[in-house]
Structures are given as structure tokens and as C-alpha cells.
Image 1 (cartoon, helix red, strand yellow):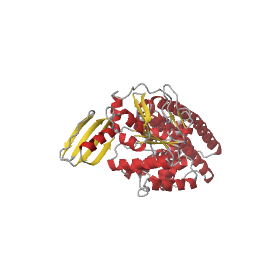
Image 2: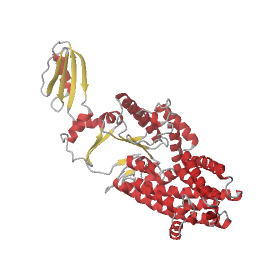
Image 3: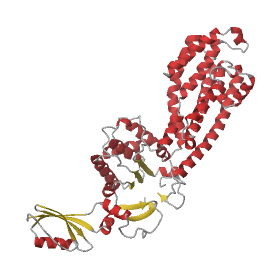
Image 4: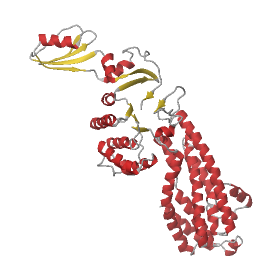
Length: 237
Length: 273
């Protein structure tokens, strides 16, 4: 079903960008092909993710967390490892669906073969950032009782400030500044922007930004994991 | 608390030489845990896959894992459904798999939290037999919490009775039953159609044709004396002496009818390896 939604969204926006006067896009050095490939990449990342925070929420609510804490591995690391397994399956599946549709609509991806591995690395870094956020959102169940509201807010932030539909370069200046400073840009807009600007300089900037946010969010996730574990062990599950 | 999942507000405990809440992850390699009402298996996966995952999590070597798995499959009779998803198993089947999973890494101590809850009589008996055999053959220390005294009677050698966090009793099971409830039930099958026996300390519970059931207060009359009197006065064809069920003993402890509830010394709980 997600694959169907993916193709439907691409079809709608392909029609939209083709109907947009070319001169409106050329000002921003954009074409319908680049825009649809941009959307393909952002949707690829979003659909590959799913809603893994719900597993942590359920573990905490049901008390199954006790079984997880009784193992000789970190619960957070075990979750991330398990999600990597799911991601390893969904990533190529949604790539086939999304890229296949985009190829059908617009033709070849505007990314040089040499940049394809960079694009893949950037996508994986983006997924790492998103999964760290899901880990923190899931662990927030410890205090909030339900992670769904927090996830809803975060997801809207991701879609808007992460540039799900259109590149951040098209945003009005104040909003663009806020978006580019937020970690959301590293999750969606940054990897997708490689199909718009596939220069080496831009790729280095994207990977550096993503790595920096990975370190920052990783540290934050570690702190939240410690706080949540302390709360479990003090109050029980 | 003994698994390290909960940090106590005070006191000290050691399990396998480790303080649980300080060394939780290290302790996890020495203990196996089964929560009767929570599963540690992966619900959608076949049981075998869960065992495989746990073997890798605990770092069990491949050759050792294969040998141990074969022993556990045979010991717990789970070969018939080991390739079935956990979600498709009955409660009794799942619990046997849970215990086998908890033993994949050969822990020296197995902690069981209400392992027979929800099981029917047959499944309970089967599980208890497995646990009893395992603790005797493999020498695994079994620490069991249960509200079912049948579990305790079948599996345990030592009983600790706790009420609202206070230690009421800590004794070998046999001594608990022998010393703390001075009543036995004696059933006589006699040649007399309406048997009768009167003794101080003996209460007639039931009289049926050729059968007499007596409640004996052993603080007033020894069983040997009762048997001697019965043999003198009646034609005894069969004789049964039954201990009181452990449940009655536990009830009496909680009601304060047995011993001095506060005379048991307070001491750190240590589970010997």
C-alpha cells in the first residue's frame, strides 16, 4: 500500500511540475525532472522508515521491556540493530518502486554514476538520523505514556522543515534559514538535493552536515536512553 | 531486583557474586529469566529463529549452540513445533520454549516468575517435571516465584515466604511441612462396615462403609500410637497417612497461626551458584 501511495504522489507532482511554466523553475535552476527525482528521494527515505517508535512504545506499555533489559545488550542498540534489519529489506524495495516510477515519468536520474554511491551513503545517514529520532520518541513514552503526539509533531516538522515536497531553496528566506539550521534538513532535503546539485563541493557539505547531526543526535539519544533506563529501574516497568 | 531491572531503595543482594543493579548486563550472562506473562521470544518468528537470535545475543559459540539446542529440544519436548511461529503456540508450548530459550546460554541460575500461570493441570505437571529434571540433572539453581503451591511442592527444596516485603519464613520444604502444621489425615480401610476409633487428639472427618477418615493432631498423639490403636481395635485392610497440602501451611503462616512470624532472622538474600 505504501508503494502505491508513493507512485500516486509522484504521479500527481509530476503532472504538477509539468504544468508549471518552465521559466518559473529555471530561475531556481530547476526542471520538472530534477524536482520529481528530488521528491522520489525524500519519499524513498520516508517510506523506508515506517513508524518504528511504536515498537518501543509497546515494549514500555506492555512491560515487555523487562525481557529486553534482562539481556546483556543495550536496549537502544538492540532496537537500532533490529531496525537496520528491517531497513535493509525496505530500502531496495522502495527504491525499485520509487525509482521505477520516476524513471517512467521523467527519464534518467540527474545524478552522475560517480555520485551514486555518495547518494546511497547520504540516504543511509539520513535514515540513521531519522531512526535516532524514532528511538528518542519511543523512549519518551517513559514520561508521556504515549509517544504518538510527539511523533505527530516531529513528523510535521520533518515534512515541513525537512523539505519533503520541494527543495529548501524554494522556501521564503526566513523559513529557509530555520529549516537549514534544523536537523530535519539533514534527513530529507540534504540527500535529495544531490539530484539538483551533484557537485563534489555540495556532496561534501551534505555528508559533513549529516555526520555532524549524527554525532549530536546520537549523543542526545544516549542521554535520553540513560534517563529512561534510570527511571525504569527506579520505578519499575 | 535480583535481575537488576529494579533498583531497591535499600539493602544489599548478590546474585552469582554480582550486585544485580550495578552489574545488570554482566549478570545477564549468568542468569536466565522467564516471565510467565511476558515473552522473550520474537512473536512472528519461528521458535528456532528466536533461539538462534538469543544464541547470538549471548555470544554462544556455534558448535556449543547446536549441541545445547539439541539437548533442550529433547529435554523440553519442543521438537514438534520448533519451526512454528511463536504466535501459533499454545500457552504451555510457549512456556516450555521460553524456559528452553532462557537456558540457551547455560546460565547457572534460572529465575522463573509465575511460570505456570494460566496453564491447565496437564501442562503444569509436564512443565514441573521438566524443571525438576533440569535442576537435578544440570545442577541449575532455580529461583521460582509462584502463587501456586503445587509448583513449590514439585520443584523446590527451600521455601521463602514473603509478606509485604517482610521475610516470614525461610526453611527447607520438608521441615516446613513437618514442623509447622501438626495435622495429618489418616484414612483407614477396614473390615468393619461402620468403623469407629476414639482417641484424644483424633477427630473423625468421615465415616463411610468400610472406610474411616481421621484428622490427627500430632502434637497430642503420635501417628505410631494411632496406627497401633487402629490395628488393635479394627481390622485394617489399608492405611494412608497424608501430609497437609502446602497451601494450608502457607495460609496458616500468613494468618500468623504458625510459629513466630518475626522470629526468622533478617538477612541478605543470597542465591548460591
